[in-house]
Image (cartoon, rainbow, N blue to C red):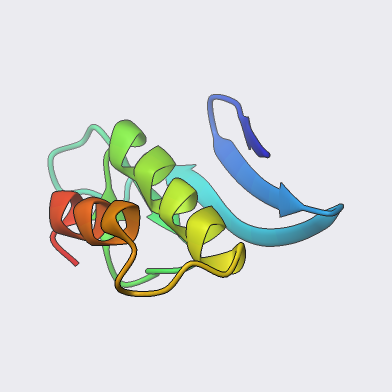
Length: 80
């Protein structure tokens, strides 16, 4: 389950935190901020992209592999 609020997102599976995303106002040079996702800390994301990245992490943590159509699609969508 992904919990989402204005400044953070948390992916929990079986009461264990699998991944997080944090909004940082000064992370992007455009002054609008960006989301930093724990599974890809060197990359800045928009809000919807952060949700997709956490959904991808959830799918992978559930045991789906690199050949899963959803995994392939979400990675392409995120440019990973």
